Length: 195
Image (tube, rainbow, N blue to C red; front, side, top):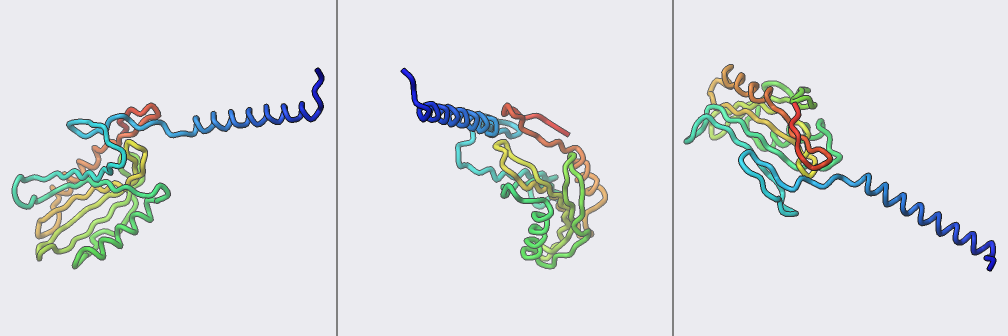
């Protein structure tokens, strides 16, 4: 039985549409981000992070158990929009500091830095908290979490010394910072350490 030219054209069009759809699905599979690691990692433990749970982790390091520490280091992480850039985030941080801190005084203005092989920004400032002087060094950079969501990372060294951050405190802060290694997630979902 012979088919008409219209039937053959229709069959060819259907085959072409099926081929294009197959190629589109294959490309979507290639472009899809890898699944996140099954477990959320902390220093001492890991767990499955339920969907929708936001990680607002802060790591706080002090020299004392009770009362104000002469030096503390806080590492914070803030989820950000995927199109955020470091310079815009740094300028926003400065604006927020100006609003939030009374008697803010810049010791060193915002300047470029490098941290664990990535671009960063550094700023140094002081202010008064309940009449007492506080001196801070802050480094910020962009990274991502285990779900590949973008983060603004902040490492802040705070000194309560009335004369400002001492050379020993500054040295301890930079010793910690210079030893920093970033954790990166591979395509298979497992994490790797990278300096």
